[in-house]
Length: 166
Length: 297
Image (cartoon, rainbow over all chains, first blue to last red; front, side, top):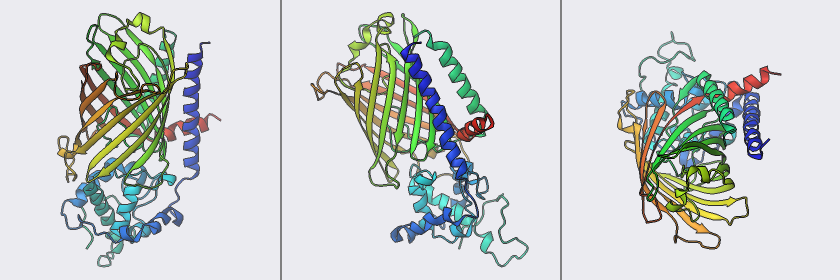
């Protein structure tokens, strides 16, 4: 057998093994929605970043734009309605919704690389703030005491642009 | 490498079938560069399949069309691994498969910084007819590509290539610098090269509605790349240098189209390297493969 053929086969086999091993590790470390440690990174956000204001907070289009961005880039891991998926935790959880916009923005920008959350600074800063606005809008239903007919944690998909949080 | 052809075909078909069977396409909003690398890696578990083409002019010989397919997989959030399959057609000569490359990119730092380093390691197994010009290094010049395919293919090249990728993103702009060191394993000296890139999306805010032609779906920039000689002749002398505007279009369906006309900056360079590429990312590919391995036990 030719050496270059052996090298090619070895590369493909190694690639397959690395695929399997890493994915098995990820599956083993499957995100548990009830595990609070998956949100621990939010507590590590530097104070300076935590107190940053969301410049898109009052932009009427920010939630809809953020939802578009979420569907394109985030839904594959966090689920279509951000309730969490196999690879990533719920963004409707209290830990996220009680965090400041600045803290969520910091996590988006820096990722949690060792836990599989990629760095999203590839999106321009205004788009990241639009995403933050959308994520925070998911918590509006959690904190609405005025309408008791809604369940406390309503996980149904939002079908119309929600109002930004006040 | 005629014996490679069936193997390559089977591999490509298997990966394509697996990718098409994976749950859904996704978009990664990558930079428009074709030669330069930035510090963003593939999302974990995702597979991106890319096809690129380069049309090159050749003074004193036949123009060529070189092409390659990339299978880029995000093994983790800090490790991306990639397999390349290269080929070329030299007009009035022949078409042939020219080799493969296996590339790995590692992100050593946990967080985002002003300058973000990524370490790149690649093994190349190709023949002397390879013309994809994915990176330019050493003293390779236009006249090196005059050799007919039947002769050039007899030379076998095993090469290791290392890059230090430095990249920054500031106010929507990305600036990337790649420092290249390559070693032909057949006792040739170390060769050096570089690639620089700057790019920016045409709009920084996303639209409230899904759209195909919105400005935020386009990104443009420029890249410059060339050789820096070898261990004994370091510098720009006798090297080829290129300047290439780049543009990318991210379609909502998940496809990305890139175009880049590259212009030679000195007499050692091809006058034109017209590149274009199309890519699509598939999420959940890794999970599907892992499931396949698990169920096979």
